[in-house]
Amino acid sequence: MRHGESVGNIAAAEAERSGAEVIDIAERDADVPLSPTGRRQAQALHHHFRRTALSTDLAVVSPYLRARQTAELALDGLGVPLIVDERLRDRELGILDLLTNAGVHARHPEEALRRSHQGKYYYRPPGGESWADVLLRLRSLLRELREDHPDGRILLFAHEATVWLVRSLAENVPEPELMTLARGEAIANCSISSWSGDGVRLTPERFNDAGHLEDHGAPATEQEEVRAEPA
Image (cartoon, rainbow, N blue to C red; front, side):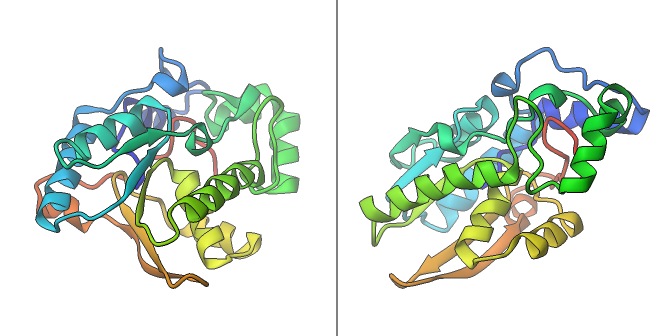
């Protein structure tokens, strides 16, 4: 699951529309909360889980507030054990933190050129992470979960980039294909992506599915993460 819409998603979308260089958010990224719409989305996810009689062994949640709030609302009263793991946190962008695309080009034109040359998957901003860096920590987490719960069903509550990278691991999607997919589709807030395993391989069940939101009266949204950046 990607987290519900956050106040950072709204601020990032507004900054991009207005051509601002900096996204106007007072909180640090880890403390950005859900918006009122995001809370409705998480509650819709809760109703969906109740209706479908959710069966899961464990929920693993990003430490970032918007993901924790989503998990807490979605799993309220369902008796699902929940742990927080820092390896599910959002990608860190270092000196590009809170900059829009216009801000990156205006304030760090050399980084804009380096990003364009290296591509989003391998580009690591100073003080930040590339998608490949995030993939390493996700690989570590998923390996542990598979060893500890070989026949279990695990819920992950995380972020847009982590959803794509879990897909790349589950389906063995190479970098060029993954970046093409990411350019063509945004991960919806509170969407569900799932895979089933037979002990050897994982088979996709659904990806970026937000139909349950409309079923339970919550709008679907697809805003960029806190920091806007092209795929």
